[in-house]
Image 1 (cartoon, rainbow, N blue to C red):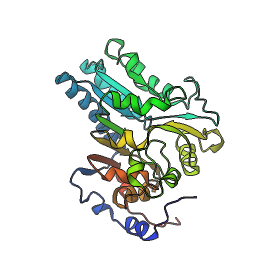
Image 2: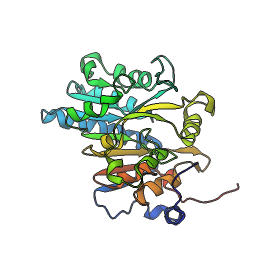
Image 3: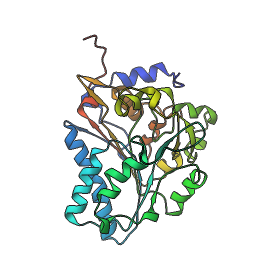
Image 4: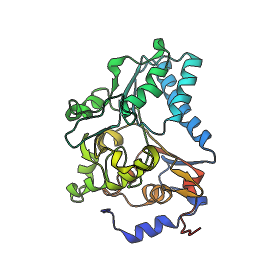
Length: 296
């Protein structure tokens, strides 16, 4: 089911202890651990708002690739934006992905699982009207624009920052590990892959069923429109946030966080390419905790 089968690499990643997880040979690849979920979300919100404010102070456009989840950081960002009267008129956003069915139909924004609906309700429409970004500067991938989505980002000079998370399968956005098979080991071709319509990996469907659909995997759409490695890796900075803690000592992200951050670069672990260039990975302490077998 998973194309990455380097057992030695998995073993090396698995045994990395928590007190060494933030160590990395690339000085531009930073790993931070947060003890509390509320602190993680506040740091995400502050990172987003600080970037918006800094670009404004320099009279610059600010181009951002945004994920949907987790959602709480957007409400925290909105609170600060409205309180400090920070205009987003100079901000251009590209959502990194959106669900679709087998025919490429995206869900209506009124469906609770819609990424566009979630982003509008929890971020864009929650901002005071006079501070919101211009509607023409807010983008979501769909069947009509997916063939030009990467070009749309490049035409704005590329993303100043790409926010995101790391999936259980090792995906970034919805760029799944099984897509790596088409590159036949050509990592440069992988890095240059553009936005597209994709089939979700079974692990992604199960992951999203757990955290968003009450465990009902039949409710998770089987496909998506997503940005490609080109869009993510061309961003001047990548800022990824890991909150995969189910409670009770269970975190589905402990192993993949280690493999992505410390394993070999592999097209079958798309998140491993975050190790190149300037990237920040912030994770909950529950994610950083040691990987161990427990029958409790």
